[in-house]
Image 1 (cartoon, rainbow over the protein chains, first blue to last red):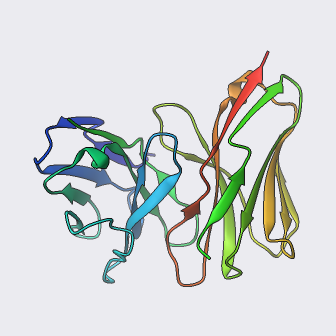
Image 2 (image 1 turned 135 degrees about the vertical axis):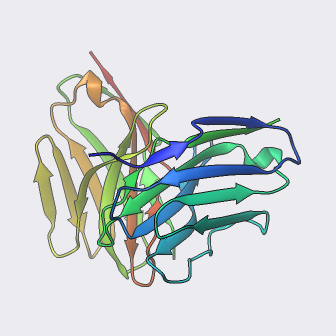
Amino acid sequence: GAGVSQSPSNKVTEKGKDVELRCDPISGHTALYWYRQSLGQGLEFLIYFQGNSAPDKSGLPSDRFSAERTGGSVSTLTIQRTQQEDSAVYLCASSSGIDEQFFGPGTRLTVL
Amino acid sequence: QQQVKQSPQSLIVQKGGISIINCAYENTAFDYFPWYQQFPGKGPALLIAIRPDVSEKKEGRFTISFNKSAKQFSLHIMDSQPGDSATYFCAAKGGSQGNLIFGKGTKLSVKP
C-alpha cells in the first residue's frame, strides 16, 4: 500500500518568500504530524492533527508557521516570510491513532 | 521534563559486532518508546518499539532493553552488518502528548 507522500521533495526559495509544503497521509490514518529536522539534529515537533479536534500547535516556532488539514486527509504547512534559519527537512508522519507513526520522505527546504 | 537524551552521537562497529545505543528520559508519563532508523535522504522508519510493562523486546537482530526505575532504554543490534549503517533515533511519548519527543540521533557506521 501507499505510504506517506510529501511534495515537493526539494524547495529552494528566497528569504522573505512564502512556501507551502504538502503531505498526503496513509489512507484512513486519523492523526497527522509535522516535524522539522535541522542538519545533524533530531526531529523537532511542529504541529499535530487528530481527527476533527483542534490541532496541537504547541511546537510551531513562530507565527510565520501555520498548517491546515483539509477533509481529514491532506495537510499543508505554510511558512510565511521565510528566513534562512527555516532551512531544514520538513517531515510529515501519520498514524492510525494508536502509537506507531509512519514518516514520509520529507521536503528539503533551502532558504537563500 | 520533555527531553530524551541519546548517546553516543556516533558509533563505529566492526561487522558482526554488537551496536549499543542508549537513551534516557525524565517524564514518567511516557509510555511508548520507539526506535527509528534513518538512511540519508529518507524519512525515519520505525524499527522496534516497547512499552514500560516489559523489560525487553526482541525482533530479529534488534533488541530494546528497558529499565523503568532508571528511566533508560537502549537499542542493541546483534551481528551488525554494513547495511545497518544509518542514523538511529530513540523517541518517547505519553501522557497528554500525541507527538513523539526525539533524541538527537546516533550515526552508526558498521565497517566490513
